[in-house]
Length: 517
Image 1 (cartoon, rainbow, N blue to C red):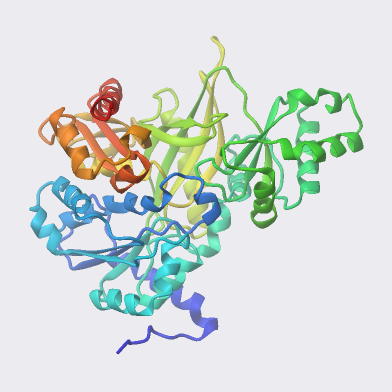
Image 2: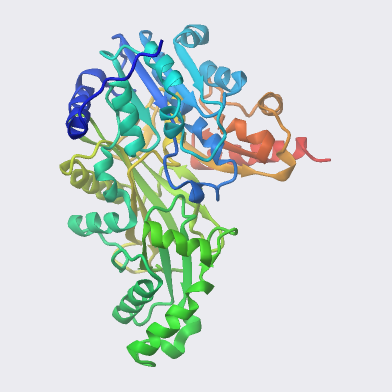
């Protein structure tokens, strides 16, 4: 017999959710703290985003594995963890993570881990799949003590709120009512409120006519612009961006044509946008503009540019904690798509973006935001003799776990060290600074067909796996993606940036060599 989830009048749903959230203060501790209390954590790594946008990413359905770093909580001897996925995770992948846990037998941790799967490979978000399966939801509910449990997720939407309410447990994530502040347009408002430099741009628009008008307005404010970027309001990893080259439109530039002529031409050339996703077309992109909205933003030019980011967390107590900085590795036709990152960000600006990230966090906390957020920047190298070596522009806020979350948590899991705010470095307990290069996109067609066990055979033979004694080597994620897509996630950890980079390339070379035909 299925026991129905707690029922509350429709008007009381928001109130009940807020009541549940207050319980996090009694149930949550940072992963750094040793916790000997009874805890139960439900991990639902649902990518509850626009599913058509997500399909642009090869093997995206395996990205539910990226939250396996949450197994770090099993270091605490009285913590139980429930992990749910759309499709079952291969046992060897789970074993791999458990064996990385320092200070506790993997068998002890495995006894406190429950795995569930919906056996549904459709494009629907995992949270929706769970809500559609009341019997499975009831099984999960029976494994949880509602007086001890809380839920974590990849990103928070109305689906995750419904799931938390159905299970009657708090959600360690943003209230979905605040999601606007993580959109492209919401980010710009936060930057303006903080006084943080950001590119000139437009309000949110939903039609081709309004987009042409927005582009024209920004161009008229900055007649020397060479390019503009059109961003879907809820794009993912830069896949929702398109570029408009203004250099081929000099005949309608401000000063060369009147406003009406400029609007007419811009309207006609929008279907010729340069898309960052190779499968994108104007027809599909415009449907997303109508649905999600888009902004037009000045493209920041520069002979030498980097893409740093800062990561923070707002605790259930409302405190803002800065967690890390990274230099992002971008690809795609115009360097708009996130491929990976290196930790930490460049020393010349890492503390500056850390401080700007803190200011953003304070604004978000004042609005009631919770949990992880990231702020992306563009850094442009300035000429010699300039008062500052790099000019920084904030470009967006991510109110979710991002591509920099799991490599940093892998570093913490493997080394048990801490981030130092004073210099932006990460130190082990022995005082050794650690660095890494990470990517979700170590990909080669020749890797297709490799099983996780094959990967381990290759890496162990080359002695490139993470060595807990030396504190260096490679750790892997997205291993389920390897056989089908020839794609793998990696975090290569070294005692210097150069060593971390070298390990990354050694892993790639070892895989290339082993798969040559």
